[in-house]
Length: 293
Picture: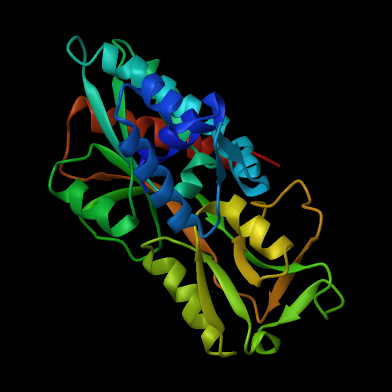
């Protein structure tokens, strides 16, 4: 999933049509259509109803827009600001996984831009294996990664540990605050599309207790919609569905699932200004989070 897919989706939503969206984005209309179709396939939902007057967003499309628009605009603004200064200052190339949007990515970008002289930022959403590979190849200056068993050639500053709960529909036949994993036997587990070995480890841990099927979903908001509609259960980071979502209960898994570390990594041998700035900001973020009640 690429940023251009989200930009095209937002353009259609905001202009009300594929032709007007193409004019806004300065691309041909077939490209906009293709981006939206690819996004709909990834999400597994229809985002627009095509009409003679243009495109009418579905309820899923409206929910998705409300969820992603502020984040996409913030990222686009950061990228635009950085792009304007690429020729006049250093640039830090940062890879990130999706939990970083909640745990440190905005603060890292702001911290790099606030250095003297400022460091521009180029962002790319990747999985932990790809971020590790590109850090070691010198193609990234820093990256958010998940897991405890990472390449020893990386310096990783832990930022947080993700704990996981099971999201179930309100009418799920379970009582109390916990759910035995064995009772998920035969369940449809709605899982984010992610190339994360640590996430696969969690799925494997559930499969040790129950036979489950996997339904891929793009993003936490799609998971919220599918679980709320009674189409399955999901494994989600604790706090990711807060404030409380109507129609969904969050239950602690029994036995508990392992937590996953999220940290900011740099190549240990990289002594560039960008890498050192990333390390400094990462340590500050770690200290700030450790001081939180």
